Image 1 (spheres, rainbow, N blue to C red):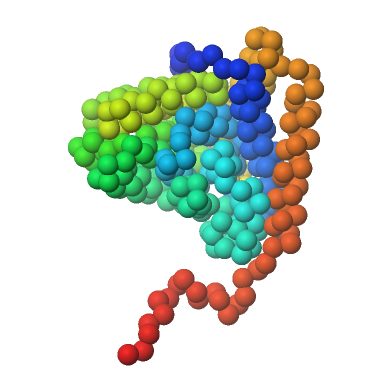
Image 2 (cartoon, rainbow, N blue to C red; image 1 turned 120 degrees about the vertical axis):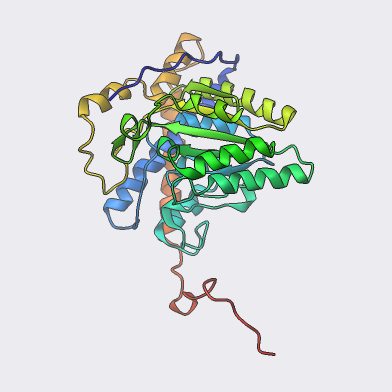
Length: 335
């Protein structure tokens, strides 16, 4: 199943250093994810594992438009969002190893990365379950007179859920500064979007709640960045919600347990032609902003970061058995 790409948004003029920065971020996410899959196959990482490979342009482009005071809510496919936000690769890998040095002391695992320092509030395992939370945080910022923006990432599979519609309705009614970001990769687990949504153009749904919405090419990091900056500016100025549907595609199965029998190899290869990493490199070459040595240097630096994360996780500490009930039961003081 394929869907035509939306019309590209007008991109801003950016310099070579910024382009290299975007490229480095996307390569970091790609190589980190690949290493995570490798560690999973070695039984070092357990539980569920949902890879972000192919969708890197969205996380990187969106984070460039946000400030440190803004909040982020993400799905269970959130390693890329966390890395783009600046969460420590060491802490992320340690979390997936189940080590105390992880972002959640090893208790959250792959699907529940959380980092208060960067205002990265998950990693949420329930489809659409974090949309109401994002609206709540945005409402809290509004009541405190802050100009913060709360960004909420979710997939196309969240849009038929009741919480999706309830959250959009409340966000509009309460005039909350929340940015809804739909990463439409065309499949809800193994279900094509045409089988779970009567209207496959998701960007047409928010206007029914009086929320402005656009559809953007999610494989183009510059288009993502430009569209998100426009959205963030609108939210900060108007104090109202905004919605972006990014059309994208995951190159790997839904999870490591997925046999991927619902789509053809030809379809996957067709989308790989639009891989966001070589797409950005092609753009840089067209604008004389790329040297042949750039990617090898980035790859070398990224490899060191990823290997350090693995070494950090390997050397990490497992939680003592005596502390397994900590944070589970409330410790009542005797009167």
